[in-house]
Length: 98
Picture 1 (cartoon, one colour):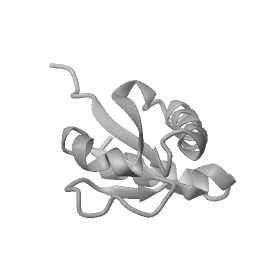
Picture 2 (tube, one colour):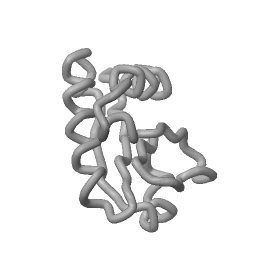
Picture 3 (cartoon, rainbow, N blue to C red):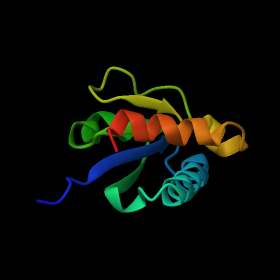
Picture 4 (cartoon, rainbow, N blue to C red):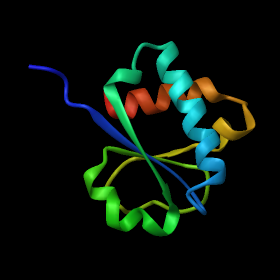
């Protein structure tokens, strides 16, 4: 049997600006580690999270919010500023068990 695809939400305040940058950095980091084909992504705004979180395995957010939705939350701000991005990628991989 194949490995179940893990689903990641990448969220920011509007669901457009910083989440797009964070998503690209996350994809690049996972690709370098050979893990990109194990995950799928949903881009979202913070207000949309309660309606979609239960069908996902992890939340990476560049804004405040997302706690208490029943899935692990990773601070995605370093993906935007380009500092400690490897630590964020490692945390995502660890929390997803990849």
